[in-house]
Amino acid sequence: MTDHAAPTAAVLIIGDEILSGRTRDVNLNTIARFLATLGIDLLEARAVGDRQDQIVAALNALRAAHDYVFTTGGIGPTHDDITADAVGAAFGVLVVEHPEALAILERRYGPGEFNAARRRMARIPEGGSLIANPVTEAPGFQIGNVFVMAGVPKIMEAMLQDVAPRLRAGAVVHVRTIRVVGVGEGAIADLLRAAAEARPDLSFGSYPFGFGRDGEAGTQLVIRGRDTAKVDLAEHDLSRELRSAGIDIAVT
Image (cartoon, rainbow, N blue to C red; front, side, top):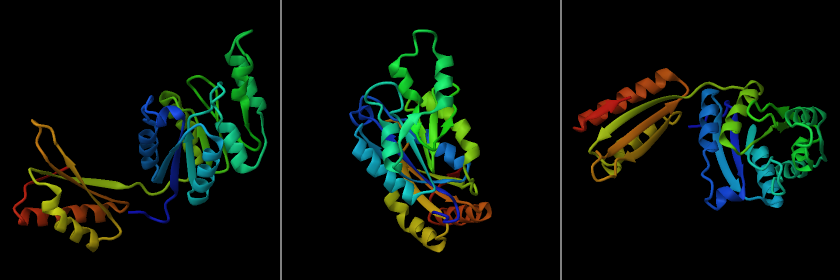
């Protein structure tokens, strides 16, 4: 289910450490939940390494296809933190020291601590505006419809506080879940397909659970939509069909 009147978004996760498996990404889940509360549809996510050409290509594709793009990673002080330069290249602008960012970092670090490496974090593409970082103060930045944020989950999540007021919100998606215990997806696939075909403006999903030796197994059926009355009616009708087929359910 995608309402074309709703804003759309994509996430670009940047960093060799993600692709190598050394670091587990949790930022995508955080951003997805953040956008859901604003009624913005997250439609795409990509992960690329610390290679400028890959970042530029992915960013240009995503920012052309979606209302908003969120990047995480690669804005720290080390040599492999190349996101600012890649974003500048994608937009075709120079990357320069931002006076406000420089002032923030100078206040953050004591005498002798504000070295050349840390000064790199004041560099942003021309025309960009800062995203506040209440955790370590080193800012992210926005340019166009792209929001460039830290890869450290705690910092990234804190930056979203400053991002939220800049976004155009849509209608929030409402969710109903029907829990079916002891019945696999295959046994209810036809009922679910019929429900989805009858209501193409809603989203119907099927998610199996409980494959452990001791846990109960079954299927969760999830109905999503922006019109709560339609979602409730779809849940009512699907529940009735399941019960008529002799299937026990629980609604959450």
